[in-house]
Image 1: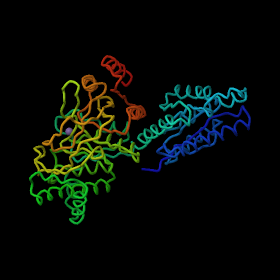
Image 2: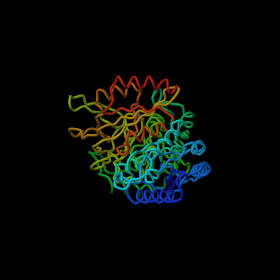
Image 3: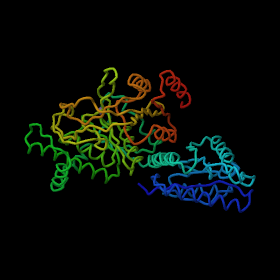
Image 4: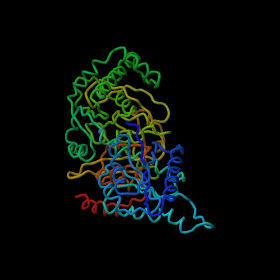
Length: 495
Ligand code: MN
């Protein structure tokens, strides 16, 4: 990824004289300095000279378009700024836009306030004029309201910055398919051309044996080193298997990890799909290998699910470098617990769950897998962290895409599951299992999801809005009646 930065552009006009404009510049510099020093923002903000004319506004937005490191512009009207001056610049601007509706002073200076102060500090007035033109032009933007030194406001700016990175980087996502979608499965299908038009994703297919050749070509010494790393890092859960035979099975996954990664790097792909029914010369279904690749930031989808693979990659990009990140993974709804008061969905996949979401020890197991008709694959097993997260499913409705975002509450299962040889998570969807699952099914959500603890429904919904697609939120405020109406109205709006 590039070293992205955000520009801070303050609007004003020359009606109030040079002294006022000097204050405007001084104030906006102080704000930028404070935001950068806060330690709360994932990306740097760059101060830009005050925008007061049509020509300068247009020039600044076009420079932002051309600057590869600029991921978005944050706008703020310190004084009044007649919004017709912004039309041409906004028309030509193509990157994420934020409107920070703030004010330099936090409190009204009761004892000293006069008309000069009012003219200089009229964001409440100028930001409405500016907001009007952005709305009239139908431009998607984020509006954040509050004093610039308030940590909650800075936190929202930080959160939006990650959405903006998702918008910028979406068009750099390239998904490699080494298998088609699983036969007869509907929800993992979709229009790949439309996905490239909407999201910028390149989704290409390769014969599985082309990647299998890279796996075969992995040097034995490199495989041995990687196996050593696995044995250092993870618990070895032999469960009665012969240690040598176990190690050989693990070595196959190390070989797959090395071969796959070289192939992905050489051909510049950041996400991959596999399919247990199309393994060619591969000796095992890629399990541990895929788990390790996801941990390194690659997107993944099982059974040819390129939409979820791209979404997992998108979430990995949006959360990159996040302090105390709890993890992001491909996931699948597997089994319910329907006991009243303990309702939830056990999440897993055949093998491929990302260890970034793990809590506690991560072990390696080698056990048979009926799917795939190959050797017993090695896989990482663990349980996951607790707390809020979001599960997202991008579906193709035939004429358009819909992103379904469910806020979920991850919990520990009541008891260990010693016979289950896969990594798991367990969550209760908001607002409850009954309503959450009903809403998910009505919305046409998949059994595969892109899951993360580290993003919010708001961030993913803003990304969807920037892509021009429908977002369906399922959370604590969801009722079935309002959801059905919303989807009915959306079906007209997104036609
Ligand atoms: Mn699956």
